[in-house]
Image (cartoon, rainbow, N blue to C red):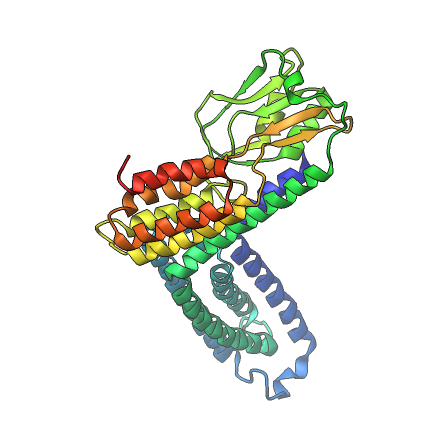
Length: 413
């Protein structure tokens, strides 16, 4: 198993988790509380310093109790705000945009700050005691003072979080975030394409057609879901070790049912570990934008179509989504959309991962938008302007599917 690919999968999962960063902050806060209380035991004269807490053990426990209780209340409030944001985004825009909020670092840091302050206060409260039951009084004054400062800092974090949420739920912010993710993916594909051109195979290297001269052995899926990511290095490593050619049957973003063909191997008689091959293709319950070229277009199209529904009736939002689709199509036009073909050191092809075509991406972003937008004068005019811009920039071959969409807009289809 490719360790780098495994780490990449883990990184993506942790990136979309709402608990990982707050959990790390809580553990760090507990460790800090233990360390500072040790320092408090060393600094016996800290009570004489005016900047630290100067009350009794009971007063210190009361302060820590108030801080811990307020942090629990604020944490519940933040969770309530998150749920409302999820509900608003799902109903007003598209449920496929929820993943961007799950990856929002500000929300994770805010939750982590409140939970960390709560855990810190409880840890310090545990060692704060008066002179009873034969035990010496211990008032960790520096620790209590830090808890007070942490509570003030979390108030600032909470105010910033409210400001951040008010900006992030705007339609322009959601559209821009989806646009930025898709633009980054397109730029990455462009860079990878240029690198493959620089590493051209030798002139005498066998072609893929020469390899595919027999019937392959089919590796079937052992689960169901969308192809969300492919660890090409792991597949290439296995193919080179066994001396075979491996082909993924469908591009990332395709739904694969249980026991359906997922991979093909040439030559068929060569023994290959199917578990290693299957582990390199991740199937998820929903599409992601990490390697899925059409998913960003799908999200923008969903927002445009939802805005054109009778219940929302917001053609301006639809036009804003089309603005982003136009920019992404122009970026994609500068990219050679070709299957990802990997070769060994001798130039022999070992792996082929298909990519979505220009036509499929175009339909993801514009097919439904053209269909539902023809009833809105503002959106119809914006779509005609998009066609005019594409006509100036893209090739005649790539304009053929655009022409079909334009005829649908004009009502001739």
